Image (cartoon, rainbow, N blue to C red; front, side, top):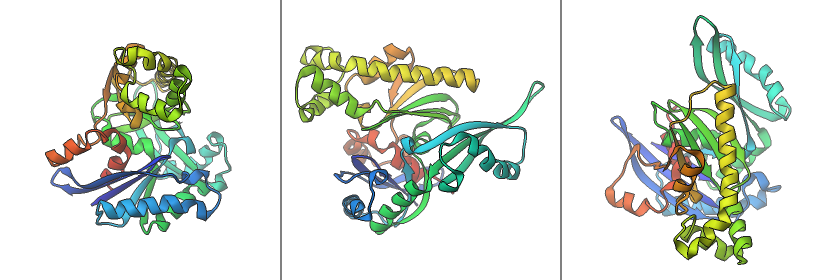
Length: 338
């Protein structure tokens, strides 16, 4: 049994999975909006109370059976780099990683939690090396997330990054793909190779930037602009294509960041070209976003289904269809096997 708790900047998502024979089975899921500040933006314990209450209430409503949860930290708060080592053993890499980390992270090691994941070991005539994913985060940030989970009456067992969770729920195990997570405040770009995260980047152009672009372009309030974004998106036929026209420059900015990420991965990491782009997050449901990104990037773009690796009741699948893209992190967390 696994429970994934995704604490977003505007919503909280919970998923509980059980594991059958070679399959995951959906036991419960739920989503709720919250008006509290995300943990990393708080200064006092009191500021965490509204968010903790939202989590507690949602947990009760969807009848989650276990109090042990896994959570993910937003990519904007995490430092991730790939580091090359000679062909060392696992224990040798574990010893060396903190020394290496000092070169790559912008905070003192004493104030950070550092983890790593071995991506690949390669030995051939020209070179022998181990590629390692280095992950570091401020202890202070982690402590705030731990606190809000405790305040909700739950027990935290695992902390990882949002993109690690998404790769688990969305990425195929036999391809190299891009995953694009449209959050409210940031857009996270991941490259997954054979089901493993090998590259990530976070940019600040995201859902709220799209809403502002519509509000400014059409001269309307942001509340109305948010509704227009969800209803009309990048459609040429709806509202005479006016929303698309307002959104296009911002979408192109995101496309340019994706191109930079692909170029960096191919030139610096000598990685293969991703075969497709998988969209996740709330803005992934915006009309025609997939077709517009396909044109900008010249790559197949699909809306990710985090429940594709999970056995679900058909009626539940139907009820989740409008919100499925929101659940990628929570499902990935619940799928985690220790």
